[in-house]
Amino acid sequence: METALYKEPAPIADKENPFESMMQRFDVAAELLELERGVYEYLKTPVKQVTVSIPIQMDNGEIEVFEGYRVIHNDALGPSKGGIRYAPDITLDEMKALAAWMTWKCSIANIPFGGAKGGVKCDPNKLTQVELEKITRRFTANMLDIFGPDKDIPAPDMNTNEQVMAWIMDTYSMHVRRTETAVVTGKPLIIGGSLGRREATGRGVMVVTFAAMAKLGLNPKQTTCAVQGFGNVGSVSAKLLSEQGLKVVAISDVSGGYYNKRGIDVNQAIEWVQKHRVLEGSGIGDPISNEELLELDIDVLVPAAKEDQITGKNASKIKAKIIVEGANGPTASKADPILDSKGILVVPDILANSGGVTVSYFEWVQDRQGYFWTLDRVNHRLERMMHEAFNNVFQTGEKYKVSMRLGAYILAIDKVAKTLKVRGIYA
Ligand code: GLU
Image (tube, rainbow, N blue to C red; front, top):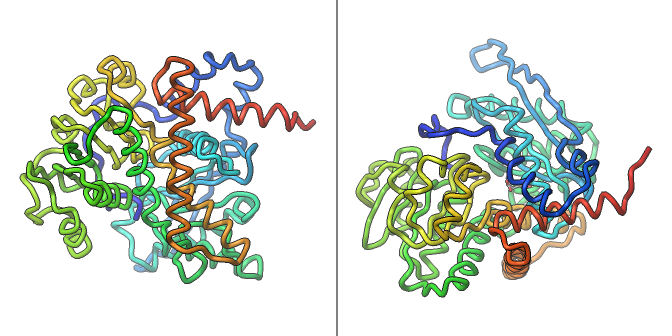
């Protein structure tokens, strides 16, 4: 799973509409770039928004109807790319924001993809494996005209995993009457997945954390860190950061936060979660709340859970010197000016968590070539591309005298806008 098992979200102080949150940053960047009105309108509007109904015969024999979405925000740079999430509270508006973030993410990561996102409104905790498979297959069948290795390529996201990707790949392949591995990424290795894909987002988080620490002259041996969320992104980030010498003093998941001033044994926490699903009962640290974790006196904070965790209400209480956004949209736009005024270096989501989609790109390339890379090659190329992306974003921020977040938006929007201009408008 890309994040911890789904449970009701923690109470959110000032929940923003995620699309508004994205647009607020987009508007500032568009103004700084002096984007022309037509291009602004073009980039603001998703190229496709699809809603499908997914009727399923449940294990008890009754028919339930679920709703599925896929939003393609933009495909100027190439086929659209982005995850599929399963959660009971997803909305089309959320998909629109997440799809746009994918467009900006792929642009910054310098990979030839546009942005998309999709999902099914369901609670995977209440579904059996058979029901989950039926939902995935019917969702895929309904999206046959949308998905395709040259059109739109799904990947794991919140509450979806390698198995779900395998079902998507199989269903698509059955319909097109050939095995088409490149239609999804984040697949099991045995059917064309890539080495290093599962750890890629966390590895990318680790790389940019070190790049940010170097900017502030922080020595890893004296740097403390807290990670919110212990799913795929949070757990791998915590593991790699502690392996590289940082002291991870707090971690959290849906069961709450855990603090240990001598440092959490991250491997022990991972082993516990593999057996017990949640951190609760592991004894790895003293219980704290998710809110308290965010406000700890630490050097590096990695929010890797979900949207809207750092808000206008709690931003002033944050003490970290660096925030590295492992999740998509963990900071509401109202928090941006507060964090900036405190001099906190925020490595924005569209850069910080782009390691996942970057290795998805490697997986797609390998599938299409039928030639598979070693783990070393994957990790080495990932690290090089994350460094390049970090430097490009940092330099853009400096050039425009704005935060790294706005630097990231400016860089991303500028490239897509230039692509649109050179391609021209088909009429
Ligand atoms: N769901 C991940 C993201 O939000 C990965 C997307 C992909 O690999 O296409 O970046």
